Image (cartoon, rainbow, N blue to C red; front, side, top):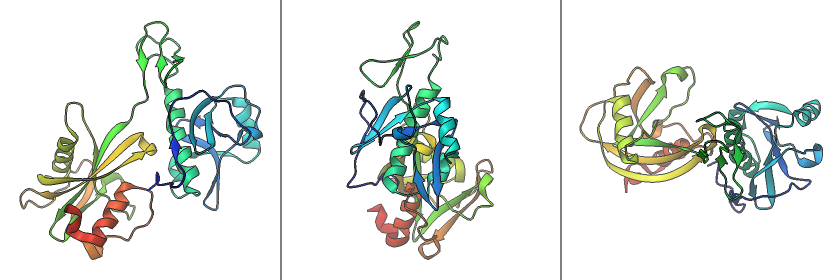
Length: 280
């Protein structure tokens, strides 16, 4: 998956550092990122290419440092040198893997800083904490930390079949998915699994088994994968709001693994290879 970059390692602890010549610089505009993607290869701008006075340290992978900046003159220089703003979804197939993961993680932090320049309570300009990764309002003392959204990915297994879906607004794409959804305030993650499956298909579930989690920068989420079984024999019935298709698919019909990026793809491939063994 996208975070599997061994033997390299992510270090995301808050720190104060100065950029080196080869440090990567993250420029964010909404859901886009300044970079080059040529023949599937990702290239990120570095400190040696631009003269920056405005920057903030974000993360490192081994000894490679990532910083954010909003310097408009630097952006203009880089754009004249062939860099462009790309939607972060375009990074999914890009290589090398470690740089992609570092860039996406740094993008999440840079976006969080961009979205929290002003206090959501009183509107004052926010200041960065001197001791931790947090923004503090100097007027009302509102304290804001980076936030991620918990999401469940659910493989519902019945006999030698798994429940695959297609979202209503993506029916033109020939890609299947598993049931997925965000956790709501006041519910456990197990309750989220049960609610999402029932809301989208009308199926009640039992025998939940946690599989694996995944940081997912594309939606600032932490994905949590579960396998489970139907509690009863009711067939799938798409909700009509989110899903355009839901149906049981045998192992031989499950699409072959197309990429190693997402938890969803890995769970589908695991079932294709092992079947009900995934339930333990």
